[in-house]
Length: 176
Image 1 (cartoon, helix red, strand yellow):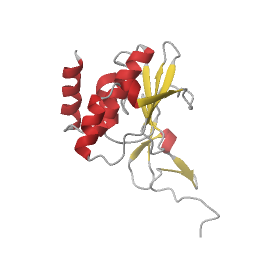
Image 2 (cartoon, one colour):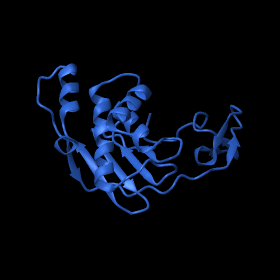
Image 3 (cartoon, helix red, strand yellow):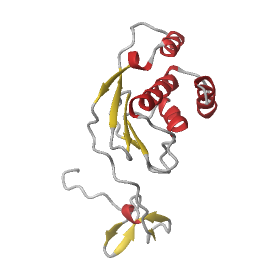
């Protein structure tokens, strides 16, 4: 698929064109160039996004990273930064958005990002976080308070009862 068609596919998924979507689009294309990535059918490609903004949608469309597959994770720093990992090669890269010229309107920002080459938009850095383990499948348990089912990793035991995190009262001796 050519880049024009790929962009259209990202816009259709996201719902509109914007500078934020362009950032994720260019980051995903740059990661493909730097690491030789392909669309991830399973968990071969992993992305850790440091934000939950528009660009993450483009990463999903282009690289097949998704929360449901367990290969799209968030490390919320509020930065326009994405770490990409290739499980098969062991290679990784962290792409950090460079500052844009100041004083731009949204429309000007969109046009600016659309006109940039990815190498001019991002600092290429080593990844700071280790490659996360593959997603696990957990047993499920019914909360003995609300009756809803939750994965074992989210169940807490209180007075011998299995409780979900919503029903489990937080324990903090320093909070009054």
